[in-house]
Amino acid sequence: MTDPAPFVRFQRVGKTYDGGASAAVRDLDLDVAPGEFLTLLGPSGSGKTTTLMMLAGFETPSTGAILLEGEDISRRPAHKRGLGMVFQNYALFPHMSVAQNLAFPLQVRRMGRAEIKTRVEKALAMVRLEGFGHRRPAQLSGGQQQRVAVARALVFEPKAVLMDEPLGALDKSLREQLQYEISRIHRELGVTVLYVTHDQSEALTMSDRIAVFNKGRVEQCGTPDALYDQPANLFVAGFVGENNFIAADIGGSDDGHVHATSPAGRMLATPAGVHAGKAVIAVRPERVLLEPAEAPHVTRLAGTVSERYFAGDHVRLVVKLASGEEVAVKASRLDAERLPDPGEDAIIGWRTADAHAFPPDRPGAAAAPPSPKELEPA
Ligand code: ADP
Ligand code: MG
Image 1: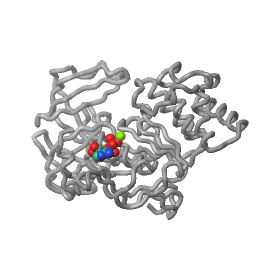
Image 2: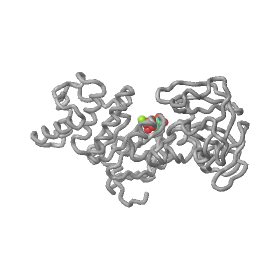
Image 3: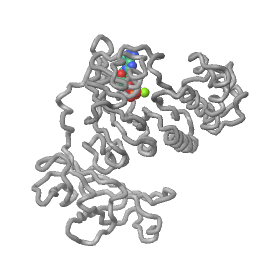
Image 4: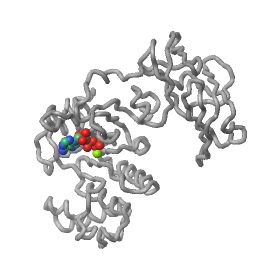
């Protein structure tokens, strides 16, 4: 938040519904740099769509302000914000051809015919649909339709494009293919993208930065590496990537690490917000060591293998500790021959730098009482 003039700035933005009874977005401060690919990531109901709709101009903030290039646009009508949009089910006009769909935003802006033709062709090439201009949307696959939707959002060269779960309706391989396509288009055009998804792997793949939403608040905002390697709290540790969690009591700390104990044994971890008392140790499955040699700064815990799966590019083991907690382990297939089978004993462990000790309850979690809305079953 040091740049005085970011491209987009959310300034203490709040959005409540039902006369203030329920808060969809709370106290949001978020800056977006020009040309950045910023993803709003979070579970369903965490406020991502509401945030995007306030920027688009389809919702009005209850409190705070939204600045675009330094100007307060909080009350500016949507069509005067110059933003492109792609939604999961943002239907193309079914009675128009693909080319007519792409021409529409340009006609609205009163562009000349010759320029429209050039731009439509350029947009089709950008999404690799040259020669599809005469087709109706119904004559395209789901993936092709979303490419047209992306092209339509970009055809008028908007200041930024907002995408809300644009790949949510597609199957996995098509989704992955279009993730790369959208990333490539972002790189080629240098356009600012605000992207919404609940899929953490999609967010990690595509984003320059990710804002992790939970209950209307941003828990952490940072690069994919930073969120993955230094999650700020247990929520982010559990939501971004996969993690094992082991409850423990911290007995002491020295030299930048903490000693902890639990019925599972004695552990070492890197403190992440707690230096004494109750903690939860988080360690990622790919960082769990099997049969580690005794060494300084290496934790070793005895357990029993309860499950073993072939997972294509790796082997996945589940090891039950003396505490009853289960730890997932991602092991290399290259080691498959010497991996233990279900029922066998195993020693697991980790390097101290790979395990983080979090406070069991997130700081601030108790400060904001849940709204009545949050107490309803999802
Ligand atoms: P997300 O996109 O992260 O799934 P949303 O922004 O759609 O979340 O919703 C955030 C919260 O606001 C949810 O609890 C949702 O039920 C509530 N909400 C969203 N839109 C409305 C509305 N028009 N009226 C009342 N509550 C709403
Ligand atoms: Mg949503």
